[in-house]
Image (tube, rainbow, N blue to C red):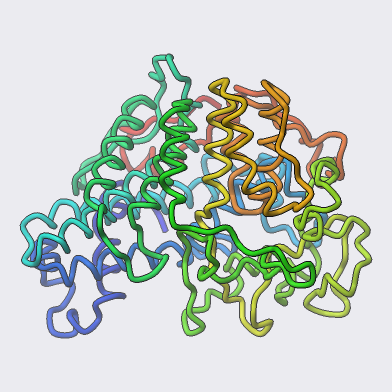
Length: 501
């Protein structure tokens, strides 16, 4: 699908979203004959539009197998980095991304996916925000709707500025170009705003969202509530090196969410397959219904150890062996990966002929091997403990950082002892905990970029041949910025300009 600048991104997709979620309404009032204001004239239809954005989070984008909504971003962000290992070229999905060839090509489908997916969300959110105040309905409903739309816009722009903009530097001007900042429905080509300008809008939106969502009780974990908005605020602050706000927001966000139960040695929750958002520590995720299965573009078709897809049969992904070796023997997470590649009892693969690899994963599993359905995790309380600990450590508060890390670390490893490390050693411990805990959930590329760290796949089980020799990339290399899709530059008549290449 070609981008026709903001007309497609910010307008027409909204009507398709509403149609999919409010079909009975459009049976009597054809889509092409209603204005946006009429379609969004009451809180019932606005709620349907918000639910449409939820649905977009796991819908296929551009017809490409790995682009199953947000899970596509999760796959790309980990395969670009160092902790997920590409074991085989028998399946080439994500191979060009692993080699850093796709995102450095302005005509690649992965760049187009990131750009279009997040702008689709922004466009739908803009339509909701522009119409909610004048709609009929209760003030409480309007606040909840506006709060969720603002959260989506803040989150989508946060994703985009990290991808297409340079790394944010606290105290710097951050005057390099990021993405077009569009906060109202429009079909007019808009030039790119600076990194600083985009972050300013992100913070304005997420702060307003937190106010609007206060007191709102959501129906399920696909929806936002104030905790998730605070969690997104914590992520934003961490990326902007605003340590105090990051720590405070993360602590507030996780309130009311208990860490999963790992007290049983035979059946700890951590080994249940990460496929059910009813897990106590999941804060935000997509519930995938069986009748809405997303087949081979689902997250589990690419990362689910027991689902019968080509990728899972011949190209299971592994953990970086050097990272695996940092995990304590008494840590439940040590059991997520098989260092030998020969453990057939615990690591059950889709078929008897499936290929096994050393350090392969069983973190993600479908509950029903006949279906690719599984809930997709976007935010867990574990991440909030890690954000708080990292922010405190980077601000120099070593004792508080160690105390913040302790509940999570001892939940995963009953033998864990409160850390006495300080400074860089403590930060390394926290970051290793983060890498292990969030493996495969789409954080590593962002973490390397925000911490100004180089990509380093050396000294582990990465195959230089599979990676086409791409085992390291220096920090601040221009390749840390994704290129703007060429279609966007063409269809905006050059109003949108390209990143350095």
